[in-house]
Length: 227
Image (cartoon, rainbow, N blue to C red; front, side, top):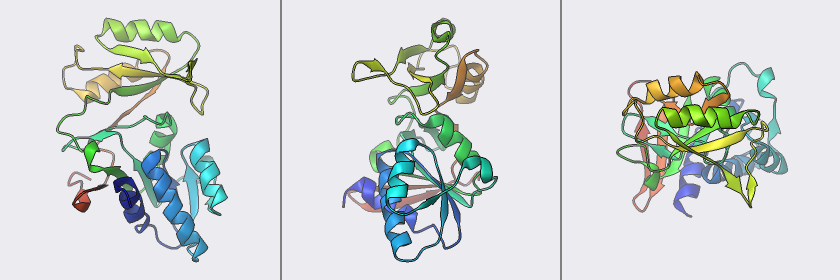
């Protein structure tokens, strides 16, 4: 069992009978869904809200019942991957392109868990870059505003084409190491969200209650003391 599978399977054990569950997107969340599918086949009764079309299709193939997020004002738990997270629980998400939906689903949950392999635990979030979801109409104007503030946004491509999110938007993969904001991630997030055309950022700042990581030494669980 690889590290991502270990983390995903460990997190699945936090899901109890009768829960409303948010399920994430990405390679580690894939294993979470896999394990939840096994538990549903064994008799676990849950209903889920998914953060992407990809996760929805996989969950449905395993017999997991899905609901529309608009019909579920509060989730018991949300479990998702993370691309980087520092000791202050500042996280970067959006490598899979589902950051907008992930943030909405996470915001409705009573308890949030991030799952990852231990390489995602970093002293400072910067190496992965920051995914920023932007409306296609006029996206170059938003790009210019970011560049003027010191960000370096690069339009995400896939197979030679512009990557399009499930919400039919684009993604800037953004270097933010030389902006006028220094290491003030909240100020960066506020500036980006206040820029016309920007819909959401991959900054997830102090939003998780628990991190479950896995590596050569097994499973590590890190509780957020500020939640």
